[in-house]
Length: 129
Image 1 (cartoon, rainbow, N blue to C red):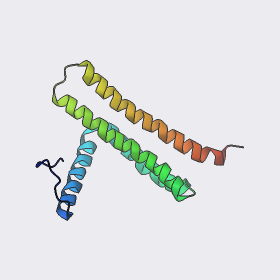
Image 2: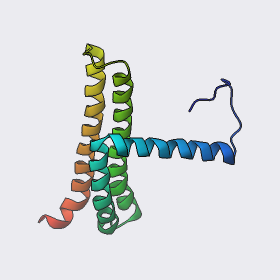
Image 3: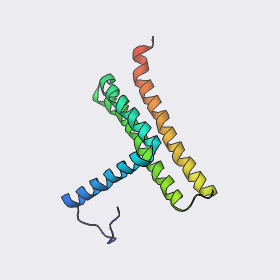
C-alpha cells in the first residue's frame, strides 16, 4: 500500500510485517476467487520440485522454477486488473475489454516462456543430437 503521507515513511520491522500481511491477503483472495490462479498454483506445486530435480546447476534450477513463478505473478496482476475493472460495473467498454485481454496475453506470454525455458534446457538431454 502507498504511504499516506506522500513522503518516505520509515521502514522497519513493523512496516515490513504489515507489507507481508497485505501480500498474504492478496494470495488468499486470489486463491479464493480466481480458478486460474488455483490451477497455476497446483501446476507450480507439481512442476517446481521437478524443475529443482531436473536442473543440473543452480542457474538452471532458478530458470526452471523462476519461469513458473513469473506465471503466478502475472496471473495475480491480471486478476487485480480484472477486479478493478469489475468494480466499475459489468457493462462492456472497449478499453476495459482491451485491458483484460492484455492482462490475459501477459499470462500467455509467460506460459510460452515456461515452455521455451524448459524446452531449451531439457530437450537437448533427451533428443538425439
